[in-house]
Length: 75
Length: 476
Image (cartoon, rainbow over all chains, first blue to last red; front, side, top):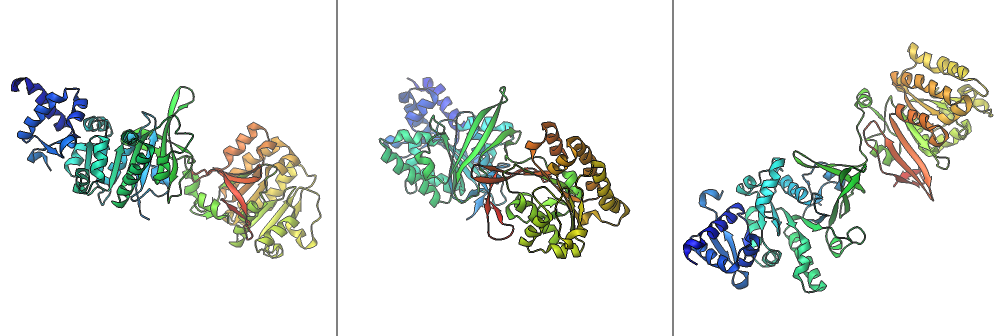
C-alpha cells in the first residue's frame, strides 16, 4: 500500500488519540478498538511516531502507543 | 482513621462518615445500574474538595470519549478537569494496567504520580480473572493490586459486574477489599423501576444497613437514605427544646428527644414491656422540675408508678408533696392514704364526667394562666379510655384535647395498641401524633422502632436489651 492509501487510517488513528488523549494501546489493542488490521496499523503507527504524534512506551509485545499532546494543549 | 467524602449526596450518611482514606471498595451491579456514573461522581467529589484530591478513571472497555460525552448531561466537563491536571481518564488493557502499576516506576504509576492521584476507579475488575491461568495466580494478583493502592493511600473503587451468584455467596474479592456497595434496579409498583444501593461491608464504618434508593438528577447521583422522611417544621419551629427520653439510643435517633409541646405515641403490642420506656420519659421530665398528669392504665397503678419512679431515683411521696404529679385512675383500686390527694378516681364515670374532671383540674387552669403548658407532661392510655368510654367517645375527645394541649405547649405521650382499635381509628391516631415510637415482641426479642417523628427521622428496628441501671433498657 502506498502512503496515500494509508492516509484515511492515519487520520482515523490521530482522531482516536486526540479524542482519547490518555489511551494507551498496543497494536493489537488498537486493532480491536478500531476494527482494523494490525499489520496496516503497525505501519501507520510507525509513521505517526516519526511525526511525534504518538510515542512508544515499552518493548516487544509490550510496545504501547500513547498520544503526544501538542504543547498548547498540554496544560 | 481519616475519611474522604464520597461526593455523592446521601452516600456519606449511608456509609457512616465517608470512605476510609486509602480503602478499596467494590461497586458491583448489573449493567445499567449506575456503577460508572456513581464512580465518576466519586472522583469529581474529590476534585471539588477544598484540598483538591485528583483522581483517575481506568477504563478497559469503554472509551474515554464516550465518558466525556455521556457525562456532559450532568454538567461534568471531564476534559476540563484533565487539562487542570485534576483528572485522568485512562484507557488501556487490563494486563498492561496491572503490569505497569505493579512495576517499579511503570508508566501507570508515573501517570498517577503526575497528578498526585488520591482517588482511583478501575472499570472493571471483572476482566482481571481472565488474565490468570488459575485461581491461585488470580488471588495473588488481586492481593497485590489492593496492597499497592493501599500503600499509595489511594482511595479506590473497583467496578465489578454482578454475576448470577453475586446475591448469594460472598466472593473472594469481597473478602479482600475494605468495602462492598451493591447497586440494583428493582421493579417498583409493577410498572416503575427503582434504583437501590446497599452497603454490604465497609471496614471501620457504622453503615446504615439495608437498601437505599438512589436516582439521577441533573447533577448526577443522589442517594436517599432509607428511614428518613420529611421533617415537620411546624412542630420543630414551635419548639426549640427537646424532652430527653432518658434512653440514649432513642434520644440519639430523635436528635435530643421529644419536641416540647408535641404528642408522641408509644405503640405497643400486648407482649411488649413499655413500662421502662414510659417511666424513663416521665422520670426525666420530673427530674427537670416539670409536672406530670398521668392517666393510669389497667397495668400501671399508683403503686406501680411509685415503684417505677423509685427505680429512677424519684420518691412519689416527694413528688406529690411538691405538687409535681397528679393521677387519674379509671379502675377501682386501693390508693395509699398519703397519695389520695394526688389521685382522682374516675371508676364507673361517664365520658362527659371524665371530660369535666379534665377540664376543671387541668384545661381551665391552663386557660386561666394558673398552669403554664410548658411545665407539663400528660400521659394518656388510649386503651384505658376506650374500654372506659368507648371508641367513638375517645376519637371525638382526642380530636378536641390534642389541639388544646398542643396549643398550650403541653407535651404528651399516648400509649396505644393498634391491634385493639379499628383500622380507621388507628390511622387517625397515627395522623394526630407528631411521632410514633413502636415497641413489640417478636420471638425472643423485644424491638423498638421510631416510625414517625417531627424530626423527619425514622429508625430501623432496634433490639431492646436489659441493663442493670436506669433506664434499665438499651437499644442495640
